[in-house]
Amino acid sequence: MKKLLLIITSLLLCFSLSSCAIFNLLSFSSLGFIGSEDEDPIFYFVPEESYFDGCRVDGDSVIFTYAICFCNEYEFDEKILIYAAFDKKELDGWVEYEKMYEGLDENGEPLFATVKAGETSIIKFSFRGKYLGGQLPDTLSFPEEIMIMQEILWEKSDEMKNDLESEKTMELENYLYNKVKPIIEGFDEDSIYALSFFVYANFGNEYKGINSFPEFSVGYNTESVADGAGKFSEERWNFAFWEQNNVPVIDPAEGGEGAEFLLDWYKEQGIDNVGADEDEESAYDESMNYVGKGPVGYYELLCAASNVAKRLQEEGFVEKALGSPVPIIVHELEYPWYVAEATKNANPNGEADDFLIAVGKNFEE
Image 1 (spheres, rainbow, N blue to C red):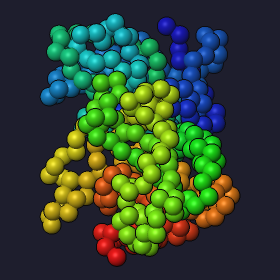
Image 2: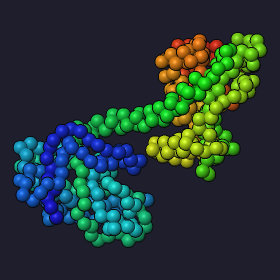
Image 3: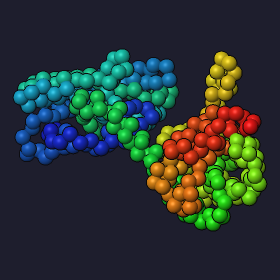
Image 4: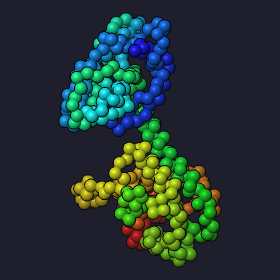
């Protein structure tokens, strides 16, 4: 086996998030790896002096340990965290396969190993995976790949993870933004006084076998339909009294691009059990006030729709498209706390103040 040479270069990393660990390192340039036999070793692994140190079952997990020999010919100590990839065939039957396993200490915490300058060190790393019930092995080959992260970069991982999660959220918001704009531009009524961003989920919404899959549509109401209704009246602000002219963007019943995009987004975000009912006990506080967020996946779409509306308002798009400032009401059929929160966020210049007052008064003038 070729020696794996590690050469310090830049401090850039490329990694993907994992639900099982902080992240799985796929490639990197903070510490390079793999060199040719004729290169002078600077910092490398010594497979011949490394060894498998056994495994044990811990609940529904299995912990396996590998002692890895490092040679550091730098003139400074290096403190590192490792990720290792093992031969998939050797893992079959006893541990659930993962592309990379994070090196842990005996307490299950990330192990930061210090390799002293000019020294060779054998360091035992434990790796945890889901136990599959098969017979545990007596031996395990040296890892096929070892990825290394310096401690300073690991300490920044939460910040980088948040940046990536924010980027993924923006993918959904950008998709909705680009779908919503031409719809609003197509509204040609003269007396539109409010836009509807309708985000809804009930058991009848089914997509690919998922019940309560959220839907999203865009519509409006006009002064002619409101027919002189009071400033804070239910007739003016409750969707049940509106024209019901919404144009679908995400429609579980019809499927299509929007529903598929949202389903893929849920998967990327690690949102499982979409449409599942929320826990009844946690959905209400001690005073039996509803504090829940609807079926799994609903609140995330609601927040995305709210942020899209906010962007449209801040850009002045709505006023330009309709000829006057118009509030965007982000809502469902009922008006729980999160409808007021989402609508307030969506209208940063106070466009929806009358609606918020009406909801706060339970539509009682």
